[in-house]
Length: 312
Image (cartoon, rainbow, N blue to C red; front, side, top):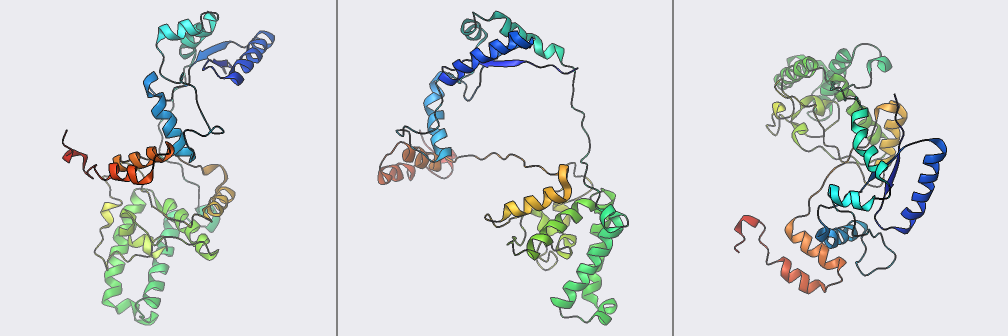
């Protein structure tokens, strides 16, 4: 069963007041219950000023600007008493809000990652395709990088050493059922390079994979630099492997467009969270407050890089 509700919030915004009237009219007209909520951006009222400065940092504006994003001081975590007082004229809205969770019985089911089936595109299983593409890539590297003739590969000690490492990695990748992941990453990186989109040479633990080097996912020879594959993927790892890929900022949208076109509903953006370090906070807050740069810089330099060394 699907439950529809109309949400009402009261933060003192003029547009919100006008929209509330519309919501109440529609609730009566089409018999959809209303619920009362409060949008929370910070915990207590005294954090409003800090949040306002943070909003300016994010939008690259100044606190004293008139035409900028600005929120009221009502976006804190309100208590039951405060919510009851705020919506005293609409007690049914708060009651509906309280009862809503009891009407829901959905629980998300945990499942293993579902990757697009790349084998249907090339023919053969993903395991076979990965083995073939990796070996072909290794041979190509030896022909171009190490200048070894193809006829001599089978007897070349260096090639045999690389081949042993390749077989070891492939065994682990296949056992953990990640061939499709490697093939998909290799596919869009090769597409980017073929379309003049700069791609980073590889960073993070993924650079320790010889398979990744053979598939052109990275440009780093892990054996040359004594990098360990097991830091990236090993049988004891619970989470999926994750290649850190750097694309040209101006053309990265083209890569995303290619992925959404080819893999359709299997592609999505994910959110990331960043932290502002102490020195950077001082500089950014000083900027949005319009304080002189030299003054802010002098205060910032008084803060040690390691806050554990700060003496109070």
